[in-house]
Amino acid sequence: MEWNEIAEETILMFFDEKVNFELPKTKQKLAKELFSDIKLIQSLADFEQIIEQEETDQKFLFFVHLNHSKKNKGYDDFKASKIKLRYPNLRCYYISSVPKKTIFKDGNDSLDVFSYDNFHDKIGETFIPQISSEISSQEKSEEIFRKGIFLSHSSKDSELVRKFRDLILVSGLGYDPKIIKFTSQESYGIPGGINIPEDLRNFLRNEMGLFIQFLTPNYLDSRICLNEEGAGWCLLDDEKYFIPLLIPPNNHKLLSWIKTSNKGICIDDKGSLSNIYEDRKVFFGTNVNGTNLQQNIEKFVDYLKNQVV
Image (cartoon, rainbow, N blue to C red; front, side):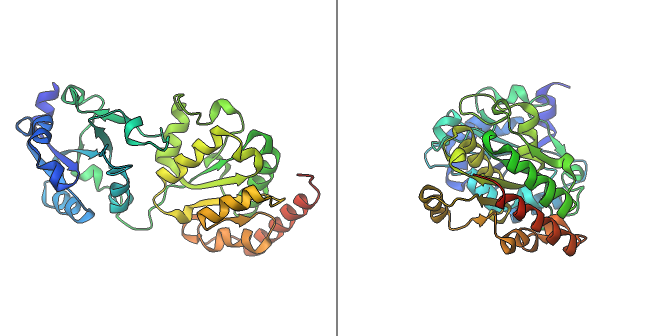
């Protein structure tokens, strides 16, 4: 089927500010006459109303406009709407009239941002419509979470991170190591200006539900680590699932960073390690053996005491 035939059967949902959506140049770029209809989306309520009133076999294409005149505008609004959280099966495509480096002046390069130019030609290939029943196939809930864990760290601290993974996450919390992304080699990091490996890109965007960073002087000196940090902030819907772990010794440089974020967990504090689970039971599940977790926390803290950091 040709792209124009697909467009004729598709409702384009466009997440944007009303003032921009109603501009003649926006209407011209979107070319409403090519689609079955175009709907402005500004909130979760707008989205739900449209999805629920259409037939289950109706085709939809969902675009998020990224406003280049305001830093991260459009993307931050879309995250705040919780549309993606409530409808995790939704495929959303980010579109702008300028290159993404102009939009994300803070250096974030983790999103695929498409141009308006000839975007219609990509319908059916790059831009894949979904039917209503596919978008709504998973029960809607505020407690839907992606279950992958990403451990962001400097390769120089990899031994400590492996111990944390093995003792706290796997042995203590019973977490499946297959969905813990553990990358110590710089070639698997997120260096600025270099394409992210496809498997890591997919993991960060589609599977990561918890981001843990291991803050050491090595971490703060690594551009790759700081780019990973930016991706974590950008891709998580809830700050509670972004965990900075402060590694001893607590030098002034690290403490200054923690002060700016108003959060941080001392990795050698048993109570704080316990709270990683206590504060996030929805993510980890309620079947964790508390006694076993505490025993593994003890082992991990003992390991730290014997290290020269």
